[in-house]
Length: 180
Image (tube, rainbow, N blue to C red):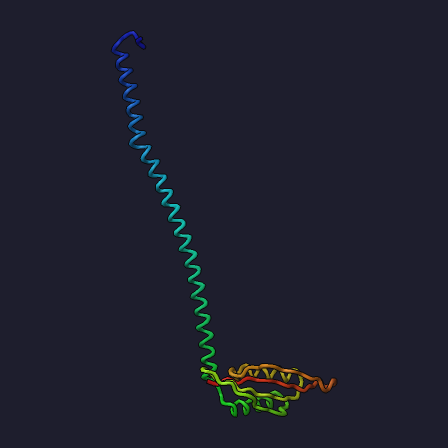
């Protein structure tokens, strides 16, 4: 059966159809199919790279927190080394406490050294103080201790109110004096 009555036209149509079909198959096999495979491979590689990037970001955050923690620890160690190198001996601390009490108008009734604890890195000596004064005077006295004697720490403190009209009280305080 002929599509058209002239055989030459039929041959041309058939050759044209075969050429177009061959071109479509060629394009499909050698252009589109490899591009599909390549695009799938590129998307897989992109997913792997994104996952590696996320892992690297999380590791970076973890390392930054480690660095911050190490810097904080280094600063704390430097602070304690500075405190221990600025330390005064016990007679000097007692003399300074007496001077601070006079400056703050707190009456220093008694100072008693107590036990000494010696470790590999420092020595700690306890001091018991009995003071008499008002609470604002005590607050100023404590501020002087904290700012000017960083190697002295308050272990405990108790207040007993004596005179309601003047607001005075007896103060018992336990201090620890650290020395290298």
